[in-house]
Length: 236
Image 1: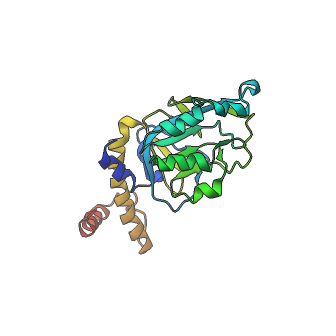
Image 2: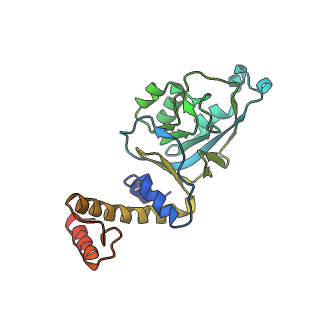
Image 3: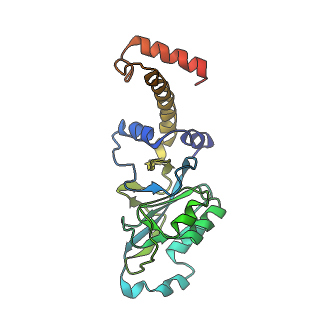
């Protein structure tokens, strides 16, 4: 991902990105039922590095599996590149923790841009204080190892019903997380930036008492003229 694309995506909302993707026929890119542990952080932007869980087979998933230096969960934490987002397919199962405060701290120290699971994290209050974007379904204080086991890293996954391919661009804000196919990232970032400028103009006009008819969408010529004037005045 280009640095310029990352900078643009840091300033647009997931709602606006959803609209831009919808125009291209992509309707399922928003990760369902995940929320930020700290909604006051700046946007999370990074390329996806994935971890996949599967239903556990109990005889293969005792606590001793963590003694394996190549355990997929541990490898994902150590191999996720700086600037990337670790996206975890936890089968939408929040009863088993996808990770906890120590592993998320390690990701942060390594320079990872954020972490997302459609399951849950343990140590959620501690993770919320770290200053690194983290998204989950709900807290998972008890680690129930019998529910799922880590099986693959950096493969295509589903997370909260959204398809995620390694290298896709992941953006999170205070509302949630959206996944942009890698080949569309540059054009989606540019279009969403334009949409954001127009939406900011419309919001200002509506708060000033203007009707949305002819303004949103701008079917009146005067609305388009007013927007051009506003852009020039605001350097947008």
